[in-house]
Length: 168
Image 1 (cartoon, one colour):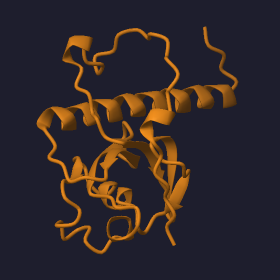
Image 2 (cartoon, rainbow, N blue to C red; image 1 turned 180 degrees about the vertical axis):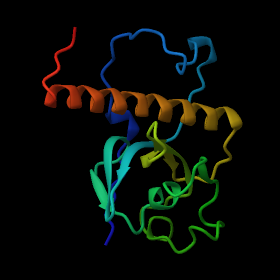
Image 3 (cartoon, rainbow, N blue to C red; image 1 turned 90 degrees about the vertical axis):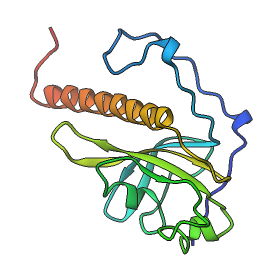
């Protein structure tokens, strides 16, 4: 049984973050391309679970892998988009679509390591069918790249600590 609970986006605020040095993957603020969807997730897809490592608009931390659309998206090398889940043959019988949760729109980009392994998905979800623009897909792709850069940096730092290497 899948139990996902909607969260009113107006009740959850993210703390502001300190500015970081410029990165070639970070678009200049004048090129900011907002995504206005009620749910955003950074997930790690395991053999039997989907772990929501960062989430906005949901109260759950994980779901079984079977019904999660991230399970399909992680098999792709490109963005995986469902503009109207009620009409898309890939998702018609999915319990997140056909059930109480009412998922109608999904756009996800694989979180791919620098050596080519998909670890998870960065996705946005909506309860209404929507079209997606090339700019929105580019924004998701940029954010997925930034997320993977962060994860790779953390992994490298952890490996250095384990090896007894101290930063200069």
